[in-house]
Length: 196
Image (cartoon, rainbow, N blue to C red; front, side, top):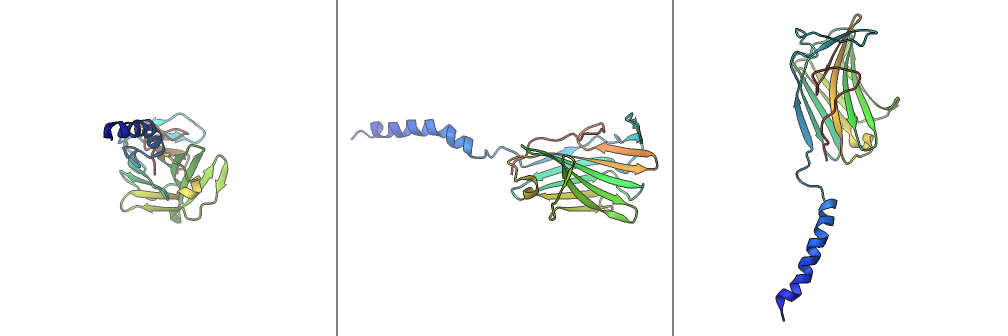
């Protein structure tokens, strides 16, 4: 019996089927987490009703420093670290954007005088979505926030892209910072695709 002749068809079949199997399997090289270090002293000030920003390099409260995003099969976790995070102003809004293959979700953690621990809300388009197991934590001692969104609230996506920002309203002025960009605007910058 010629072993080479017997094994040759099997080897050819393996080579032909290998790309199909590889396409179905998740490559180990796909990232499940990303860390972005933001530019320091890039907080912008807007007068309410105006879209013209003014840089405020001396402002540290709300100046994002690091954004860390992790995507697992069960949750998306976004952690932010600030140069300084102190209670103050009329409203503090921690903004998060989560893009999936099918939709863009917005999450906000609102903190106001008398309730500086904050409350989280999730929306898709203009509609608020129920997500009872979503959690948020604001730690003014460590200058951090953490948002955890169960992937079940996002349609169990095969990948996500995420971003984070911060807005503090004080009187008629809004101070804003986009954690993945040197500018602040109406739309958050989002990071690379992350896979569970």
